[in-house]
Structure formats: structure tokens, C-alpha cells
Amino acid sequence: MTLAVVADNIYKTYKKSDVPALDGVSISIERGKIYGLLGPNGAGKTTLIRVLATLLKPDSGTATVEGIDVVADPIGVRTRIGLGGQYAAVDEFLTGRENVVMVGRLYNLSMAEAQSRADEVLERINLMDAADRPVQTYSGGMRRRLDLAASLVGRPDVLFLDEPTTGIDPRSRVDIWELIGELVSGGTTLLLTTQYLEEADFLADTIGVIDHGRLIAEGTSDSLKETIGGVVVHLGVDDADCATAISAINSLTGSDPLHDEDRGLLVIPAVDGSRSLVEVVRAMDEASVPILDIELHKPTLDDVFLSITGRPAETETAPDDAQENEVAR
Amino acid sequence: MTPAATKPTKSRVTPAHAFKDMWIITKRNLRRFIRMPQLLLVATVQPVMFLLLFNYVFGGAISLPGVPYIDFLLPGILVQTVMFGATNTATGLTEDLAAGVIDRFRSLPMARGAVLAGRTLADLMRSGAVNTLMIFVGYIIGFRPAGIPQLVLGLVLALMFGYSMSWVFAAIGLLARTPEAAQSASFLLVFPFVFASSVFVPVQSMPGWLQVFAENQPVSVLATTVRGLTIGIEAMPSGKTIEGMIALSIAWIIAIFVVASPLSVSLYRRIFS
Image (cartoon, rainbow over all chains, first blue to last red; front, side, top):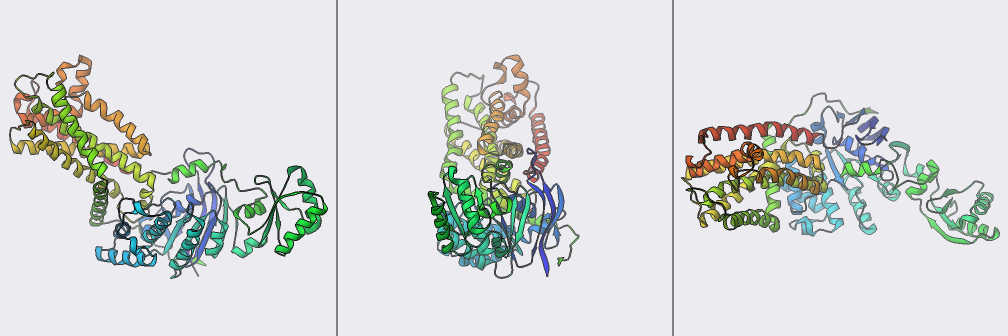
């Protein structure tokens, strides 16, 4: 087994911030595997990608890609990686094909190689029909696919995708997941960041959960879900009834449900699927607690966060949020 | 599990690749310019408007012994146009930054300075095209240079000056980060240098304290040099020779380039830290 990506105890604090964006992160990815880095905005996901893709020097710690140190030999790393996702954009005023050929040329492919390689990737991402139109005319989903094509044109050993589906509609999202899965099936190592548990679940062999610049959990999708259960019941009750509801659920399941005060929800592992839902309804009925809202749910990032940290994911209020967004632009 | 074999050597970009990278970026920037007709329009209409307005609105009020105002004005306009043209380097870079295009470039095995060199080269070529157009429009409304070789030399000097200023504006763009901030900062720099200068009027009409600045700052040095070339020695301020002014212009061009280009490259490399 060979490790394609190794980050060892990476620290990074941005100049105008006193909160570290990365607070001692270590991850390693085996060659050919997909690693999903899951966390809210401002957790440090983009910063880690930027360090590994040689865009940002860490304050301390070492990182290697295919055995090459990202600080000592950035050009060596860059010949072996592809970067795509929310911030690595395509050029609006060029056509799809021109974009891909240009990036291929900048990977030092000859003109002929870059052109044939561009045809190949455009074919694979189903953009052949639109290849000669300016990117300005593309939909959001098409741009993401073109971005993928550009990140793959240099045949990278390691691909970094920073939130590849953030901001696109849920239906195209699944298409992009399938496409990414196919594209890396030839043995490319992929590090992907995401805010969606489903996305990491669909694609990744290993999932790391990151928060405030620290890796707070790591494992396979199954092992992570076991910490919370495959399905959960989201129960909404009035604040005044909350204590009654919690004790009623405790006597039902033997433990207190997770209480997400931000969302005004109790999160209960649904061990028996829809039967659990019915049991919760009954328990509320017996305790005379009116139900405002109840739903059977696949666990979300928020649920995972709640179960690991005991608090909701602070998607909008993380202190390094603004900073990371600013510098990531 | 062990990491893949460690490679101790540092990979480098060969000069041939560096030039190829620069040219790819230049072509990309020119293509973008050609595909946005509004950019082409703004870039050409604005200086033509300046030329016509100054010539017909102010020209009558400015009397110069023995020299038609258009002959005085056009060399100034050439220098003004390269200054305004150079500000495109700042706005273009910040637009690429905002769009994330720079991130992609920085993740590719490119030469370190290729993005900036390609940007400044494209802006130089555009300024060359706009200034050629200016000369034709000027000719139509009465501009007559002393000779073609002098005019060509004057044009080349103006363009080289614009090129070194492009590197100054590259630094401004990299410091400003957003297109809006880059534009405001650029104009703050451009306006005093273009207007408190010999571009539109002889500096002798300005108050004494301003004359000192207006006569010696680089935009005036260039305007006076190009004017000396296209009109002749009679257009030079007393005590100045054309050869001396050419040497002074080249000194400014080199000095600005030597300071601004390493500064910009270093800002580019450390742009997000």
C-alpha cells in the first residue's frame, strides 16, 4: 500500500486572524482511494486543499503528494495534481474546448496532445455538443463539468475537488457525483471537500470530519453513521415541552435524544426505521406533548456534528469563516 | 504503509516553457478582449474622445507660438493612452482573482511570472493597437509628424513606458484584490500624473510649485520626449536636447520596470498567506 497524499500536523493561521484555520491536521490517503473531507463553512477544508495544492504554505507541519514535499518542490507537485471545485474557475470568455486545451498546454502537453486529450475529456463529461460555445452560455452544472474536465486534462495522479457541487441544484448534484466516481475509477486518488454528508457517503472510501481546523472524526461512511444510526427521526416540539419530550424519549430508547437548539429539533436514532417513528409519535401522545413537526431522515452533516460534538455545526458563525472565504476567492 | 519514494530534487520550469506559458496567457487575454466588443469600444472610443475634445474644445484657448495645437497634443495623447491602458493590468488581474482563474493557474506547473508577463504583454499589444489608431485619427484632424522614423521611435518609447507602468499596476491590482478597489487606486495614481503634466498644456502656465512636479515627473518626461521627436527641437523646453530627453525617458522606463516587476512577482507568489 502506498500513500498518495500525506498531511502531517499542519498548522495555518491567516495573517489577519488570530484563530487558526488549520489547528494540527493530519490525514493520509492511499493511492487510488477517495477521501471525503466533511465540514461546515470555515472549518478549514479549503485551507487544507490549498496547502496540499501548493497554493498556500503551512505555518508548520509537512505535506507530501506522491512523495513530493509541497513546500520544497511545488512545481513537482503541480505536474501531478489537478485542482477543481468552487473556486478554481473556468474562463467565461473562452469556449469550453479552448479552456481545456489551454490548461492542457499549461501542463506542458504539446498542442496536438492537448487537443486530443481535450476531445477525450470533453467526450467523457458529455460536453462535446457545447464545446465550441463560450462558457458564458453554460449552465451552472455545465460549468462544474467543464471545471472537472480542466482538472483532469493533465492526467493527474491526485485530484483535489473543493466542494464540487456547492451551489448547484440537487438533481445535477447526483449527476456530478456519478461522473466524479467514473472519472477517478481508473486509479486516480481523490481528495474531495464537501458540506454534504450524502456526497461524502456516495463517493468517499474514507470520511474525515473537520471543525475549527481540527479533524474530529475519521472513518468509513458506515462507521460514522453507526455513531448516529442509519436513519434518524427529527422531532420538533415547543420549547416549553422540550424537557417532557426528552424524558419520554429517554424512557423509550434508554438515552437522551440529541437536542439541536439552533434548529429547534430533537434528533433520535431510528433503529427500526419507520417503526421508530411511530413509537416516537406514541410516546409523545402518552406524554401529552403536541408534535409540531416530525420526519424520518437520513442523517445530515448537522446530525453527525451534533452526535460527535454535542453541538450543531456553526455554518454561519465560525470565527474564521469570513477570513477563509475572503482568501479563498 | 509508507509514502511513495521521496524525490529530493526540486523541479524547475525551463526558459522555453516559461516563454510558451507567457504566450499562452497572452493569447488568452487577447482573445478575451476581442470577444468583449464593449471592452474594445471603451478602449478605443475613450482616447479618441479625449483627442477630439482637447483639440477642438481647449485647442482654441491654448495658443502655442509656431506649433499647431494638434501637433502638441497628439504626442501627449499617446503617453496618456498608454497610462490608461496600463490600468487594465490592475483591473484584469483582479477580475481573474475574483473569478478564481488565478487559483487554477497557480495550481498548474507554470513558470512563476508567466501569468503577469502574459497579462502585461497582452496589455502592451492592445496599447500598441489603440495608439496606432490614435495616430491615424490625429492625421485626419491635422497632425503632421516631422518624419516617420521619429514618429515610430516616439511610439515605441511611449509603449515601453506603458509596459513598465503595467507592472506597477500589476502590483496595485495584487494589493487591491478587488476590481473596484483596483480601479479607484489606479485612477488616484493616473489622474495627477496625466493632468499635472505636459500632456495637454505647457507646464509654464502652472503655478511654480506645481511646475517643479509637472516638469520632472515621468509622464511629462515621456510626453516631452515624444513631442521633441515628432515636432523637432523647437518644441523642447529651453536647455533640453532631444537625445538627453530620450536617455532620461529610457532611464525612467528601466527604473520603473526594475522596481515594479520583481515586486509584482513577489506579491503574486505570496498573494494568499
